[in-house]
Length: 230
Image 1 (cartoon, one colour):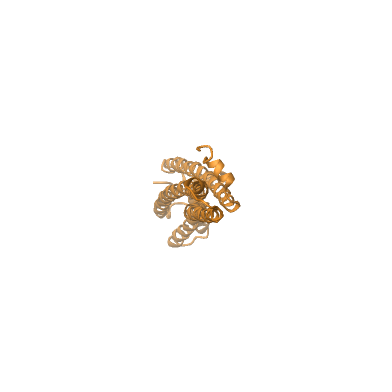
Image 2 (cartoon, rainbow, N blue to C red):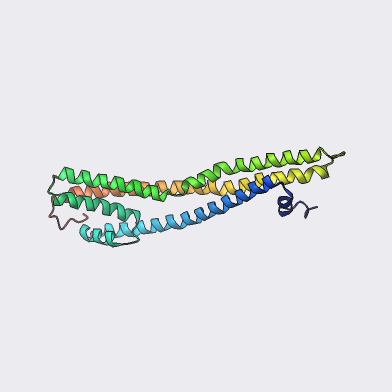
């Protein structure tokens, strides 16, 4: 009996619609796990890079040297790119000899635009996890309803209906719901975890942007070649 009602046997004997639903759910589950592992690795790498750059930034190094290092680094972190965008705009406006307020406003606008781009990149594929988490249970439920309908249609041709004849068809249908939950639960957990982590990174980047703006304001009257972190 256990062998007859194993998941593999149930799937093999299910209707083609239920099999198609299960195959789609398994593909969605595999794709969501790929996104989850990629996000775990990517966000951990971003946090390590931010910690390293903040240590270098607050060491009192010349801002021009930091800018050259960040601009020439191929694998720069979001915080480095945020810093480079603000510093680049600040230096351009300074070369034009605009007033201090215009220099600072230009740098802030550049950093806000860069911050939005970085957050958009960090949130990539996050919507996919949300879609899998919200849609998968309903897709599985559709497979279950269809499977139960198919089972009852088959039972209508029988003269005598017993639990032994009903159980396989119902079990085949319920497999779709189980696999729908199997796909949805990790996607929902991953979505909530990554949304929280990205919010923390966003707060970190916004705080850095404000602190860097304050540093530029203190250095706006310094010679153009030697602004420093103080």
